[in-house]
Length: 240
Image 1 (tube, one colour):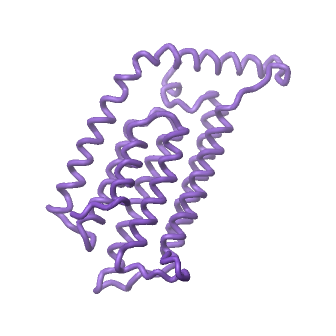
Image 2: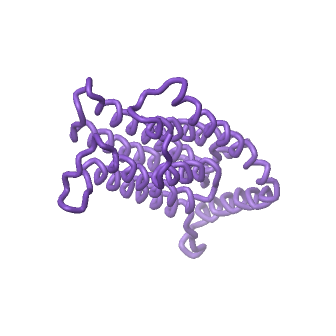
Image 3: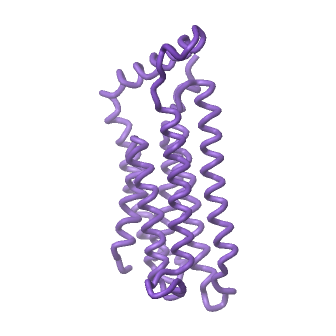
């Protein structure tokens, strides 16, 4: 398997999303992930650079636009549900809800000293996913090249593990987007095989629309959870 800068960036960005908890970092890494995916596809021999002299393909441009859209949706969602409110703008019921949110935030801050333990499982899960992504292309190759096989296996596995280890709704959404990116990459690679029908822009465009709609669904779900619990933390669902 030949490693290039795009494979390295895919590995770092997906691994960072799996391991890190700060939404500012994970959302930025999602944009990096889409950029690396666009660059990886743009250099493949089955992708024709059809956008002028810059050597950029329509497929790569679609991935970049998809990444910008999904990142903006999730970033705006996170900003909306982490902003501060002024007490003067709230009635007594609003202040009661704010006090509840502050208590939840205080519980989270008090648990920060124990949060190091929370990184252990994601870290070793990421190591296992990395090993599996290296071994599976040898045992069961699907894509035209080992590097593409590694990329889609890594995206899919890290996405599943991100959802499994998520502590909030936004992190679950990031994992789902990683999984769909892996499926998107696999489809693009398999459909370009000599015996296949070849790349068509419309199906790939529809896949990108599905990812944007998924980001909107995540934002909507985050709004419902925050409206009920005044936090996006999944642990609050199990509190009495």
